[in-house]
Amino acid sequence: MSEKMKFEHNSFGMRLKSMLKVDFRRMFTTRLFYIMVGVCLVMPILILVMTTMMDGSVTVDPQTGVETVMEGFDNTWQAIGTLSSESSSMNMSLTGMCNINMLYFFVAVFVCLFVSDDFRSGYAKNLFTVRAKKADYVISKTLAGFVGGAGMLLAFFVGTMLGGAIAGLPFDTGAAGPSGIVMCLLSKIALVAVFVPIYLAMSVAGKQKTWLSVVLSLCVGMLLFMMIPMLTPLDATIMNVILCLAGGALFSVGLGAVSNLVLKKTSLV
Image (cartoon, rainbow, N blue to C red):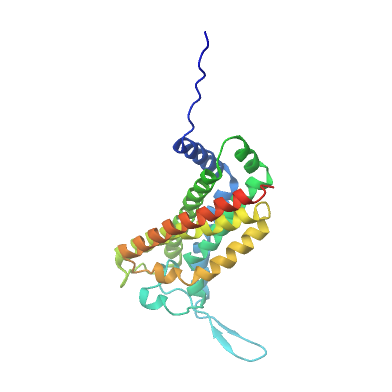
């Protein structure tokens, strides 16, 4: 009497759940994530305190004699963003550049290091050989990168509150209002879903060549950097959140397909 062998069907949901469990466990147990979040927490404190101390100081160019007056932050919320009426202009000042928008480049470094480690260690090749499909890998890494990026933005926000309090800067919300600031933060978190698929595509193209994936990610990120203040102003509304979520969904699907194709058509070593 022969017995029929039963094979457990490994569905897409089961595979993705297993892949997510592995990626999140690796992310939350690695020092890289906590170092990046720690830097994002301390950075706004140093920026707000140092710029406040140097506000009004004058430096003179010894060759031309031109005087430059250091301008600090007038309000704590300037470290989070600018109003929609100001975001359309090219603000290249210190206060315009040293804000939360810098973190989208930090997310690039985090995603590139996180992905390249899989290829350097041989984990990716072993993973695809044994069980996982490349589409599962792309989806899992996109979600892990989004959570990691959101954690960095939240850490920067907390650091901004602490830095503003230490520096004695006002917390007056002005034209933005409390709801605008909340929507601004939610918009910036949602916008991470636009950048992560870009960085993931660059990472799977560079594979174990971390320097290449980082350079490619930063170059592409620079092209979209000036759009961040316009999409996520300090007086944002629910429409800004919806637009960022929609953009994140489109980029995740479109560039996710590109990343999947790159993994299928190129060598894993």
